[in-house]
Image (cartoon, rainbow, N blue to C red; front, side, top):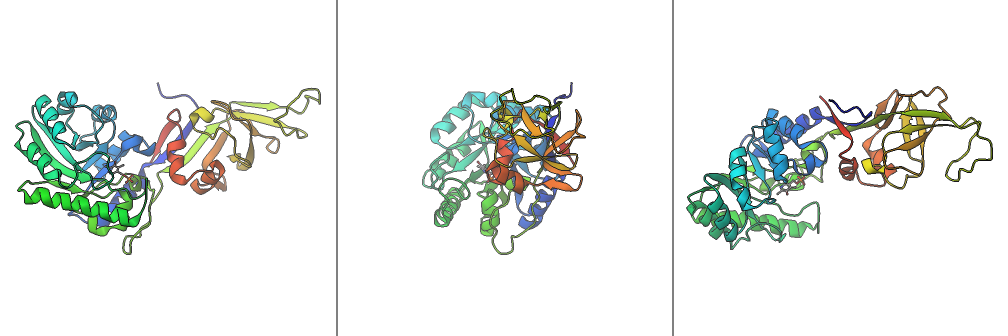
Length: 371
Ligand SMILES: *Cc1c(COP(=O)(O)O)cnc(C)c1O
């Protein structure tokens, strides 16, 4: 059964195709693109974004959640899949069955994974000074050597993830982390170990550090249109994949004949007042405290949202749209008639940055794919 709740957001896959083509042109044919789809591809849908990446000629995708990566395989995604360090070594047989590549950082990792595996390709993660997962430069050759010497593991590549757009953002610190990852790669190769895929560039680094492309890059947010400051020569047009958030009126009710006897502390009473109900609320991602002057589009007009928000319902003031009817479309994001609410405006209404809008729209809201 298809979902029946009349509330959905719209993801434009042609925007992602455009972004991946732009990225491919920018880094050139000698650099592979691994698309990071962690966090359900920032809410755009990890399986749909993986399929789009596959059609666009990406070299692979990267997941942060083993269960989601398995779901992608069941859905028919055939691209190589890299898993960030989010599962335990005893899952090695499951990874082998689904053709997934885990991330290893330490000698303990290598010993445990190699004892559970029969034949498994793995990635080595490099820690350039963020001090999360990864081998530090002086540890990397030893860990890479242990993988190379294992009878059951094969080194598919190595990657680092310098902080550049989250955590402590500091250009000097970012440069130092990139250099220390590249130094670690050099030490591994100097030890005579082949590293087929080498990458240290997430979205912000691709745009700001063209010299860090190596032979592969691993952007996530750039693929869905979230861009970052670009170095000279890397300015491009990126298109946002999130283009719509829509619902329909599930009730229209006149309040003009209730008189003055009924208390309504939260309702701005107006002559001829009419309200409508929209099946979308704070448990679906709408801000819990309704923003002042928040509006939506209905029959091409602006209607005001009335507080308070409910878990799965919002109220709109229909007084100025007397022709409103049950089932009318309500637009929070997107075009209707000659008016449009864009990402910038919605972000201002919700008092968040545009990137946060992607994560804010709840999983309970159906994704509808365009393009
Ligand atoms: C999240 C992540 C990425 C992608 O980051 P973006 O900023 O979304 O491009 C790349 N590599 C690793 C290891 C990550 O964890």
